[in-house]
Length: 160
Image 1 (cartoon, rainbow, N blue to C red):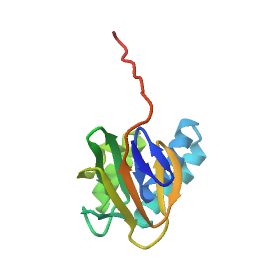
Image 2 (tube, rainbow, N blue to C red; image 1 turned 90 degrees about the horizontal axis):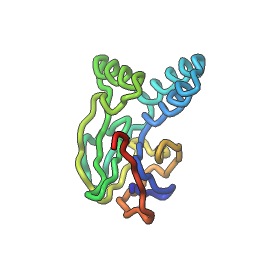
Image 3 (cartoon, rainbow, N blue to C red; image 1 turned 180 degrees about the horizontal axis):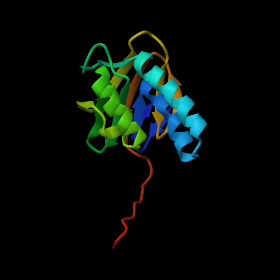
């Protein structure tokens, strides 16, 4: 699992202003067209103008930060992927990936595999995160670690 002061994420953790797209995702699930339109405008503004997030200990990636960093926990550690939308082409590609509900296909940089990391916002604003899709707010500088899951999880595979 990925662990921080606000809790554990079994499936994944997202950090940065790009987490503001969660409201658009919820509007899409509810087929709320006005909510999608208004949420998209707000999320786009927050993603491009919000407080970027960077890896400060150890220092990974760009010192100017990213709008979204994804943590994917596994038995080997936490895989970090930094999503970006620099310039019109990348912004369009990332928006298209979001609208297709496949943000992971948008422009991103693989930062590496870590057991622990400290993230910080570039301007000292609180750090917005999604823990398995649930929003939470952390201090401007926050530590994340990989943790062993205390319960056994079962998965099924269709087609057997």
